[in-house]
Image (tube, rainbow, N blue to C red; front, top):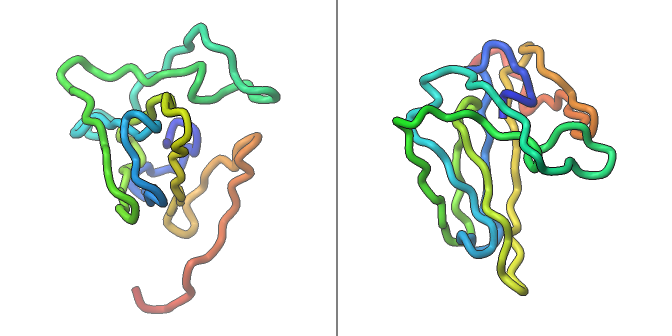
Length: 136
């Protein structure tokens, strides 16, 4: 995700992915490459796919170049499961091939206060303080 968000340093950023329904490969769950976050920000290459309307960049026309030593793991989980994603972990999602099951999830990004990040052309990310405290 840090390819898009550009939080610096990257270790001050994490995403949470909450399954609001049961998710499987059939309805488009995610896959990730455990350990690959240790490589730092990996290169991204363009694909021949077409971006969405009004989007120059998106997951449909770009992919992360993951070294061959890392193997993807499919993340199939029941509703209510919370997954934490390091900002540099390569991941993606399967196409939903089911006829009637939507993969509903809630994705939140958490960036340490004061760390610069890219708002994005369509994401329009903005800082929302989670808490204010002198103690942490």
